[in-house]
Image (cartoon, rainbow over all chains, first blue to last red; front, side, top):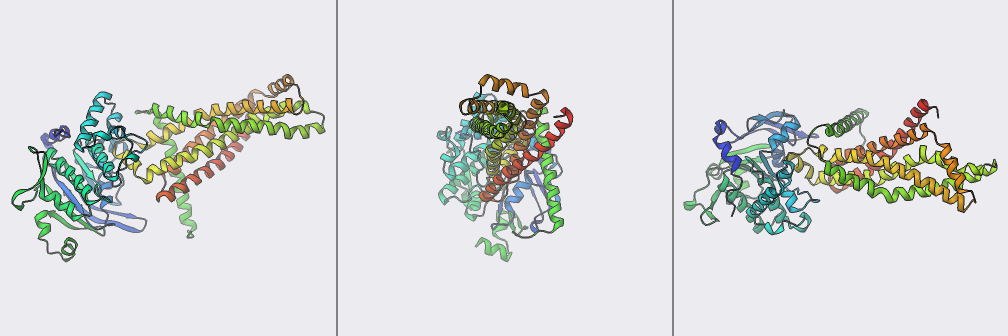
Length: 281
Length: 259
């Protein structure tokens, strides 16, 4: 198993002087589509090595947060800083450079349907003119990580929904990003496939400690992430002993465009907020 | 469809023109900075240029045929049937070749571009491209614009040639004209200004086809229905613009060359 995948940039970044600085800072951000306010004055911070799970009912603005963090859309007000750079004011050409450090998994995979799995996964490497042999090796390595190396020559239309999502994860991690954005990686999938995807996210979290944001509307996925860990000796996912939870996994709950909760798993479970208790029950 | 106030209609129109102008500028300017996607340009040249050959050849050929057939009736009244070649050549090279080729390529490729890019837009592939650090305008629009302008120029020449050949076939086989005199008259009819006029038009048409097709593709909203709407609008707008710009270029060329 290629456990060393995605360690390059991360380890370098962790040694840099700004390693204590937060990776993502969202400050008082609001956005309105047409006349509907989608996000209203939301603020949160994601620190290095943290896995932030964004929970909430559908239509609560979760995917919009993800696109805002990646600079794909701009807020009406407020600021978003990623790696210390204000993405709300950056020029698109500068954003392309910043996005080289960010991997993103889209809600519907968003694989390029005219390209094979290999070309999809190697897309960024081809853009960076990485030699063909090296790119091929890295594609195999990334596909091995998501256990899909046998699909390398196939096209996205030949894959199932879960497989496409896994290829999308391989595409996001191949460039060894410092931040991974998972936009509903388990959305629309059956529970077994969802668990497979979450296992991959846990593996990525525990092997590389890459900072990540993950959207889900399935509570079981969120708690699976919080209560399990990847054992590098056995190569398997296992529950954290004594009912403990992963320290680096934190929660953000959004409802109707506002932050309802921002904190650790322990705080979430013991919250007294009536809406939150009903949502979690 | 809800009625919109004149004010918001005017604002939307101006915003669209601004967006279209920015897209056009970026599409053109991108070729002068790195990275350049030459492989995509060649692929698009093959798809747009070589792929449009059959319809352009068929349209051009039969337009030439029917032009010879129809003009012979009028020319007969003046006893000038021998000038059929003259008329076919001038009509094809100055007007019908460029305009019909533009319209046919618009129907085939503006729709193709709008639907392809539109589908990519609604399935988040455009966002994925941006997230992967690639400028979608540079990767998708610029190759299409340069490929269409370059290939439409040559497609127009092919259309002109097969049109004149079609006119010759009809003149010789159905009207009993002498092939040599037909081609001689055709050749003599054409002056430098006519050829320049006929070959300037496809440069504008090609630009219109690609930019309008890509603009509607890039601004697609609302799922499959949106893709259908974008495709229709791309063909309608590009066809109308081609004819309007044809008139403007014709007037300008007449002003320059005097014919």
